[in-house]
Length: 116
Length: 109
Image (cartoon, rainbow over all chains, first blue to last red; front, side, top):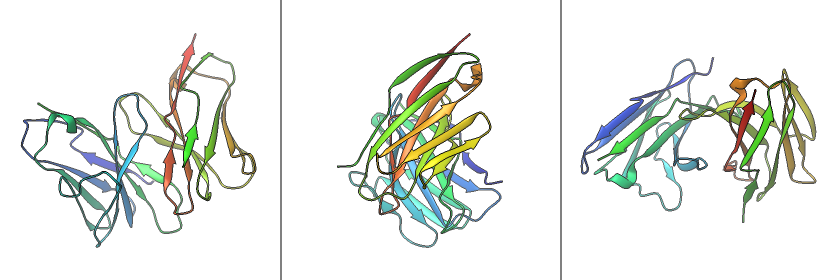
């Protein structure tokens, strides 16, 4: 149980285009989803916390107009990287909590983004 | 400020035991997590401690001392597939996870 999927797993795009990454909880309802990015050999960096039906809460330094997050249902959250640039190239990982009381985050497999 | 410290890299031998330490300084404390992350993959959950003491789960055990701001992950009977990064994360008073940089564990035959 508690499986989280992400799509696509890898994406290569041209500079200036937008990329959408989907995060789905497959066998549970996720009231809260998290978006992280990770640079090579670095720790996870929380970008934003997304609650179903409300606006995402962004961490300091993360541009909300550049990284659009939508959590439209209890099983789906999307992250759109708008007008992507090479410095946005990174490993993006989503995670989900199974409920208000649940302490454990379950992670998706991640999406590797390369912006040329 | 909030901070998590863990060694950058450790090396151990197949079949042996290794202990990965983690110290934390957070504003409040609501539990400590250990995750395993293989290269190029997302983290997978290993353990969660909120009370002092040792939690054993098969070959992996996790220990917490809240008074010392200290935790360790103990891996027994090491296998080659245990080669990975091990991430320590503490939850603060706002229930935010503060992540360590991870410890890269290299297992040698």
